[in-house]
Image 1 (cartoon, one colour):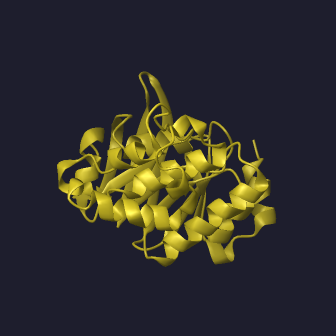
Image 2: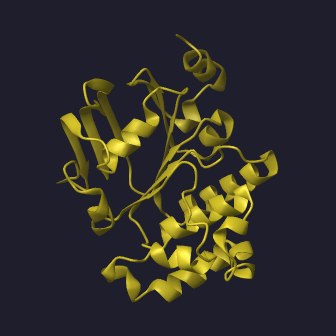
Length: 233
C-alpha cells in the first residue's frame, strides 16, 4: 500500500534521512521505533509533505505521494495524528472533531463519523460541549485520534501517542490501536514504548541515525536484540 524507497530528507542543508526504504502492507499496523534523533518524526513529516524529499520516492497504492501538498493529503486518504496532540483548546470537543471532517468531501458524513468516534471514545461524548483545554492528557490524545479518524483515512499515521501519559492510559490507548487494527485499518505508528509497540504491530522497523537498521515481522522480533540495537551508538 505505502512504499518508501531510498528517500533522503532534512532541513535546509542538514540531511536527516539517509536512503530510507520501508513498506506498509494494507490492513496492517507497522511500527517505527528508535531513540530520540533517529529520524522518525522527520520521516513522518516527509510523508506528509512537511519536509521536502530530496531523493527517492513515496508511493501510496502505486501513485506518487511526494510533492503532494500537506493540505491535500486528506484527498489521498492520509491522516496524521501528530506528536503533542495539537488540539484546539478553546474550541469544544465536538468542534475539534468536526475540523477532522473539514474537507468538503467529508462533511456529508461528518455527523455519522462523529457518532462512531463517540462510540469508540465514550468519555468524549460525555464532554462534547466542553472546551478541549479541560481534558486530561489521555483524553486529549483520544480526541486527537478521534479527530484523525473523522476523514475515514485509508492510511493513519500516529506519532508518539503514549508520550507523557500514565501507564494505565497507555494500556487503554494500545487497546484502541488493537481495535483499529482489527477493523482492518492501515496504520503507521511511531512509538518509543518498544514493548507495547511490538505487541500491537504486524511489522517492526528500527531507525538509528536516519537509517533503517532493522526490518522484521513483529512475531519474529526479539525484544532483547531490539533493545541492544536501540541503545547502540
